[in-house]
Image (cartoon, rainbow, N blue to C red; front, side):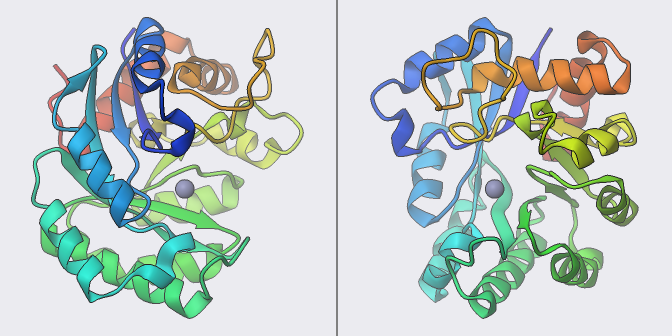
Length: 267
Ligand SMILES: [Zn+2]
């Protein structure tokens, strides 16, 4: 079974000191490939450097963009540097970008401006978009619908946590959905768990969003709250159970869907 984690914040400070161990443990569980998430300019540049090859037996690519939390830092210089990064081979998507009205670390106007600018960058670069949305579904969907005809390669709503109605909105538009360990949480993941069976197999991508979102159902419970890409197997197991499919089937479909979406060779 071959697994690809489409959302790993590998450049996070939480992984400093044992990145190779994190990669090696993931590789042992079958996670052969990862897309490192670029969350701001510095992290995107670090991700692009890390993704130039293979580390600990894992093949790495990355996204380059600015998370809505950092939207206040998005200026002309950021845009110019991202444009350069988007031309590099190992950079396979623009983002993460979008809207996060849960915590509003950046003002909403700044979030909207940075989001729209990055959608334009995706159109320019001919790349897919790696999207983040929290508590902003209506406005986010409106911006995305408006930009959609100009987006050449579509988009994935990463860490999708909502229910069947929101899923239908994104699927109708043509989006892919990234499913994290949120799906392992029977308490707060109820809406998402209802949606997972309805996602077409060729639109469903798997991710950990590590070091965040440690799956709640791990046995034995890890001593650390830090999530790692090796726990992608827990996400896979939960998704397979909810869809009434085998983990092998879900892994194979997600592998194919991921490579098609990011334009990578599945071999
Ligand atoms: Zn995110």
